[in-house]
Amino acid sequence: MQKLKQANLYRSELIPVSGKLVERYNKCLVKLGFTKTKLKKFSIDGVGWSPEVAEEKKDDNYLCNGPSNPQGIIISPLQNRKPVYSPYHSFDRDMMQLIFKNYSKKINDITRDSAVIIDFDQKIDTFYEPLDVLKYDAITINFHLMDNLYHQQQEQFQLIEKFKHNHNFIDEALQAQILESAKAYGDLRGRDLIMPNLNFETSSFYTKAFGGVYVLRDFIKTIVVFEDMDSYKEAIKDTHYDVLIYHILQPELVEKLRDHIIIECHLDDVVNTPKYERIKKYEFAQLLKDTQHSINDILSDSMLFKSYLNKLDIKSRKQVMSVELYLERLSRSNVYKLEDMVDEQMYFALHKPHSSLSVYQQDLIWKLLINVSPKDVLFLYWYDKDQFYKNYNTWDESFKDWVIKTISNNI
Figure 1 (cartoon, rainbow, N blue to C red):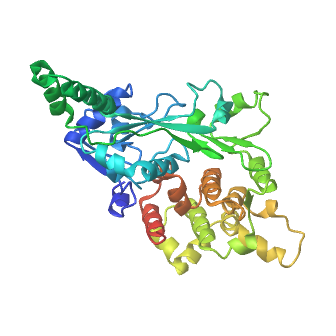
Figure 2 (cartoon, rainbow, N blue to C red):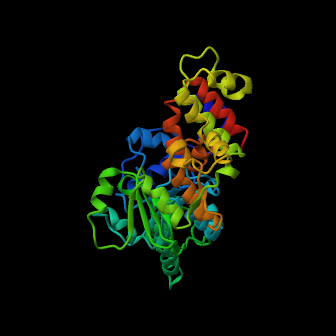
Figure 3 (cartoon, one colour):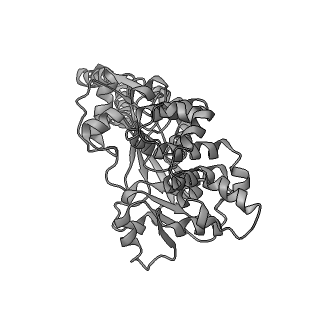
């Protein structure tokens, strides 16, 4: 990952945590029912998730009390507008933006000496079956303060009122109580620590529950797409819900998404775009073996590209150039069929969300499409960083150089 870090493409916006902030973070973990981290320094994202703590605990979802109960931690106002690098839901960053939009001033005050624990409550104690994800509707965002600071404030108010009553101001035991509370929590009288619950409405979304599930609600009929085969097989046995169920690798999924006006693909248009060039070069790179030049040079230099393309066997050449070959022959005769000439996965990779979709819907569908056929390295980086980093570790070093250059030139 060193090359990605040098190019500022690997979790470059994480917030460093050390000293007192580590102590606060650990108190939050304990309050949530988790064990403390032994790390003295680490970093966190917008929702309080830390890649170092996740690695230590060997659990990327360590901030979840089961699949149905994700949580967050705010220990710094710097978390405002920061990315959520390993979101449990596709709407996690939207929820964090809602929180800071409503409570940024209070968070600034509270995190001077405390922290905010977030409970994303969808009124589901636990999941039992894969289609339980359809119960997601309105999410209530609850807030708890480290050390029960709000309750300590109320206790201070009560002590002070008692202090003012009659001759209690001479009560040394009461004086000691007030002083002890002030030393432990500071003077809380003038601080606004009340953070009422917030409501967040869900529509279509992605969740990591059950190995990864897309729920597409905003269209002709609800479509549920599973990434995990076992969860998919269990879900299709459930006759309680009237929904369409697919596994993400089923070719029929793409056809159904087109039929429901969720995605579209116009080869005449897309063949002239940078997206097509990226996908074609990705396809080409997977076929290159024992080259005299680096893959980065071959993909970046048009003369080298043509030279190595012509060194491939005829089947491989047709695979790389299948779209252009198909369009060329189609211009002469309509007897040619797309499915006979264009590689299926390459065709799937060239789809895009339908132009009628909202921005949020488009982002979700891009994430779905890039997981159907992860051939566009730029969009994989944009829409599924977790998967991008996993794939990156399997690539040739020279191909990594081309990927980094491609992403850097488009950011």
